[in-house]
Every structure is written in C-alpha cells, then in structure tokens.
Image 1 (tube, rainbow, N blue to C red):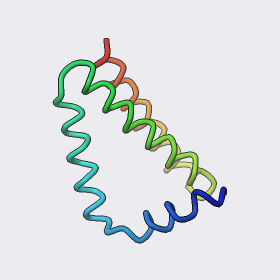
Image 2: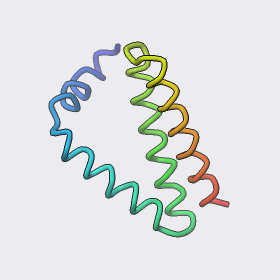
Image 3: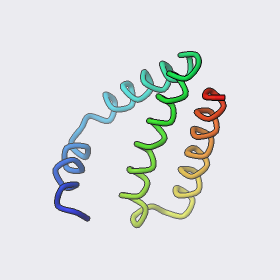
Image 4: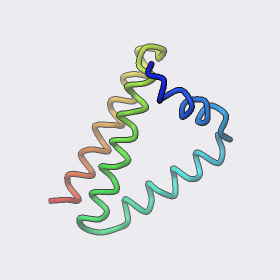
Length: 85
C-alpha cells in the first residue's frame, strides 16, 4: 500500500457505516435517475470509485465476495455506458 493511501483508508475505516450507505444510496439514485450524459458520467464515476476500492481490498476478500463485487461493477459499468449511448 502506498503512503498516500493510508490516511484515506484510515478515514474510511472510521466512518459511520450507516452514513456511508445512505450517502452512497443518494448518489446512486441521483446517477440512475439523471438522464443522458450527466447520469452516465456520474454512474461511471461511481464505477471508478468502486474499482479503486476493489483494487485496494482485493487481497483480503473471500472469493465469493470478489465475485459479487465484480458482478456489481460489471452491472454499474453497463448501466453507465447504456446511459451514455
């Protein structure tokens, strides 16, 4: 892990899970219900954040968790690209 990532990961680990879930839910709903290019770009930005989180935590996840995360990432990217087109 790089030194620049440690403060961010420590901050994320200390965040309230309910607040993080609700904030993420709001952003996902805005991305899904915003039409056109803006919604597509917001959805792809969420996918990029998920890719960063997935890459950081890949080594400590169980194979079943990895599969579910990859499926959700694929779905999110598909929705984002469909909204762009």
